[in-house]
Length: 474
Image 1: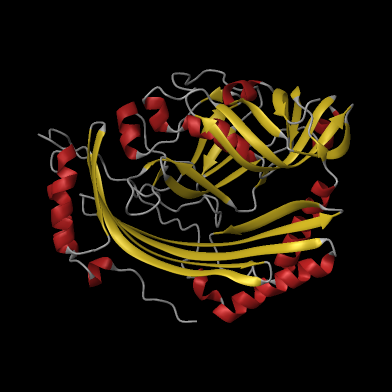
Image 2 (image 1 turned 90 degrees about the horizontal axis):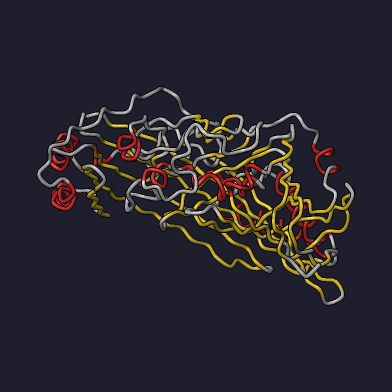
């Protein structure tokens, strides 16, 4: 299929020298700033209960202009990329600069690294082909088991193209593809309904996702989880040991710990981990990284939204806090180097410190031995939604697939289990780290201050002692 012409705003929409002159006007006397230009196209196709529920295509472009002075940032954005719109934005951005007195920070040092291709995933297949795949998913799931009463499948693809211009005259470009397939199955037996779901994707095209060998395995997995839940008994309640599976359960790590290690919360002293740099905050053997450099991963970025190349940043090393995730503003104010974690949802949003792919490194324990060490607790391998209070690290997570474990034996699946605790305590109560580190299949989205960005998570099998499990009365 034909693709749109590349996004080259300085050739088609506004003269680069004019844009640079206006950017320098906006950032005169400031500490930092940039002009962020973006074009994004996205398509979402949803097939639910035997019919097309949603078929949407969205296209947007615009710019965001930022001037930073001290702790203050002036930000203006527009859906019109033109000299007139940019001139209007300058006045707003300069409100943060005041009387000036700042010195523009050094520009990010660029690399030639490229972590993903730049082809448009939307163009990988025609609209009828995509719909046919969704219909085949529905038919396959229903044919697999007579208890299947509803099937939902969503195929999404997008391409984000960005150009970042800095006052030193350097322009950085990044073309970011994304594709994802999600499948959910509902089964019914004897009047009881349960669901199971799975998904996957990354910064690549649709070809692999819509291949039958891929989506059939995804349907099989969604159906397996649904049937497991059909047999689930009410979850116990109380304080107990919890074994966490590898991969997607790293979402608990992301929420309960990752947000607390973002630079802005620590600079302001609002994080539960503020002021603890160099201290033992986790059990020995626990090493946590945020790594935006893994090729083709959902959370990866060649450069962040300030133009800084992404990094492989160690946050916790052998239990010791050694680093925070930083954008340029918070890094400067804290006297450290940016880490490539300045991210924004779109041109309409200012950047802030955000995670990319956050994961715990493998240890040396065998996963089966970790589960066998659970005397009275649960084994949680799937999670749904969760929430955390950054100020104290307290979290609540719901399990989508979990099992009762007694005397080291995995028993019946359980439903309605929630994990309750706080990140700082949970880190110290990690008793075993498995040798099976895995990343999630590419389904993560992270929200912060109203902005959403794609992320990745990962971890090995873990044993955490003394978490509170909410469920039915024991």
